[in-house]
Length: 338
Image 1 (cartoon, rainbow, N blue to C red):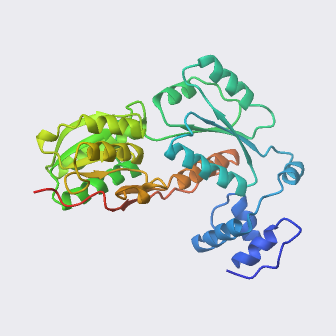
Image 2: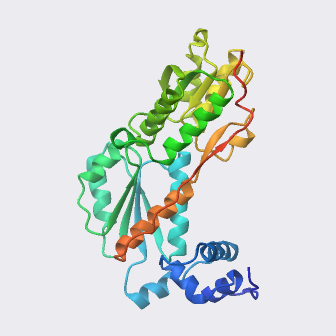
Image 3: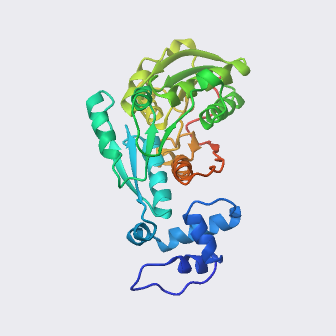
């Protein structure tokens, strides 16, 4: 990284960012506009410099100069959960770097009139576009019936049950099953998410495929609502007499509830039963025992969604996203009890 003079008393400029990153100010400007063709190493240097300097574009000046809006409306349903909340954080960070402000609207999918009213308010003349973060069937269906008057991107996970698994959810669940199989586990129990969520269906499908490919057996399944309480209830109903040695939860909160329920039943994790999660929430490494899980880069998913919307607004092709799923093996998984 290059050197940068103190910006005390004034906000940092793109010239300060360029000096710190060791690139030209034109490169910084191109990055902020979302343009492609920037070398990956330079892109990362600019990103680190923007973070270090807490750079915020002058939105008023940009809007006046270009006579275009710098506001984006984000439609979402559930921001209290780990995945959707982190996707929104990533979208917000990318929007800020590109010189846009996000207006976040949380929709009640059970109220059609409220959705229509929110969409009318979201499509005003001072809105450059709409980013719809759709996690559930209900929200996807509601958006499919809507009329959008401004550029809109509906960011919804593809349903692998219809097209075959190729996404991070599939890769992540395969990593979990591969890890447990290597530890000698053969009889599994799934705590899946709510079936109205595409991600839950995708994770369950990937679980089924991963077991089938390794000739392993799923003794039973239960479905929660992503909460620790639902994982706790599911684990209390576990048919332990059937020789289950591994509990695979579709997210970390349900895994956390399962660990408590198993402990209350007098079972040791992982000596008697291994437990795994998905998502790698911030607390996963500090549970007792620390939770084996899969790290998914939700923030990058949000950044990618915003970049695709911006490309659509500007009439250019978006760059392909590179998502990754990484197994985080920790103390909640161990050799199968023999």
